[in-house]
Image 1 (cartoon, rainbow, N blue to C red):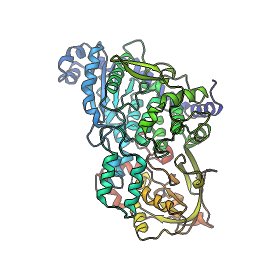
Image 2: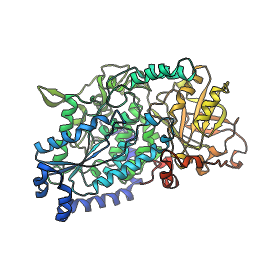
Image 3: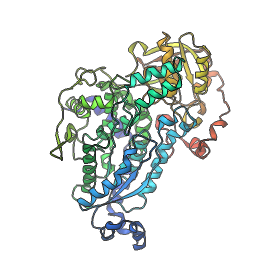
Image 4: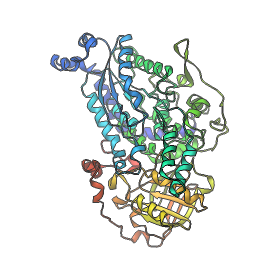
Length: 601
């Protein structure tokens, strides 16, 4: 099937926009590759320090003739998704030895759990942690003793930060090894109902805790289709995972076999062999367009609207919101996974998962097949699914029909003809809405504004019974310059209760929402942000606002709005406590949300 005209046009536009930056990037990559394996240029003393604690691998490392794999790990016990990585380094070292290679843990990176910090001051470090992760991974790889990198990360900012680092060290091949989703627990929709009952005072904290613990119950990624699982989809669509690796549960024989296979592949694609596949060649404009297609077809997390431009910029590729908007219009929504539906990612995987979806999209010409991946050239391998047959890892043809059309539908008969995200623009700035989880009758909301400057004030107004009519709730001074752009997911139960009471409700903010957010129409990432003098800083209670996801408009309908003076509240409290003092330089130097809200790229 020839490439879809819109996909081709968007790709050409990105290529033209990125001609200069991508050219500079590729020139630097070529110079780094020409220098050869970096450790060959290190002094003997440098190398002795690097290999001193490597035991049985010391001789092979000193000879410098076999691939040495650098492991960058985001292991900790705070993230259920990352806890399985505790045992990965030894698995990787053993697998490397069996194929005549070596492996070292190059370094660790921080990994915040947004589920722990949601609604807390620590959430104000969340987005900035992506750039810290990129920096930490860069420090890890700066030892310059590696022929390829293996990245262990899953969750929200971790994968984007690691991809930024992988692109920055783009002369090295990069293989991402996931840990997989936890097994299904309390259904996500039941958990959401319990949260709403708690918000209205119908139940106590003990019942809420019981529900939460039944939902988040073991090792692995949270099972809703939020940012972490969207990341895993992206890594497969962009060719940095092995085929079918994303959604295999942790600590299973198949998961371990995929980890071993990833190590073997990393060792096979270094510059020392005959199949050199540097990360910088994998991460081109076609790979990022494929990632955007996957984002729209699955109804993925809005956080990737921030992360993808930053990830791409690290590889010299420049993305714009118009690219997201145009691809969203061209790509059908094929999946219904919570918060867009009732199923979780385990159900999605069982219904045919990414292998079925990629096959459908390829048939319609909606994916680039002429790409470089860690598994080989083209996407044909990614239509295969891994299985253990007689103890041996084998890839077989993936499903060509959906096994549950309530979860996964063919591209010719999708849940929606367009994708899950919508760009909004108007006299309030530019933003984005995740429409895949919002009922069609709520895609247009026109109502008076209630303006707040933090989410706790919204909750307090709700408890006082102040929301009695249709309302557009504006939460401003939540952008990257103001306080690090925290997720406002803890507002979801409150706003959902208002909506269930029959009110028309929308959220407008320069902050973020969780990838798990849905149901309530939310215009988020509004830029320019209020702290930069953006239009949100001129809003007042009672202003009539129109949030229109059909036409893609975000406007205030008030005479003389442009002549108003922007408010400038005291934001000094955002600068201390929970480590926020150390991030003042980030708040002062961060870029706009439309460019990824980045500091280091």
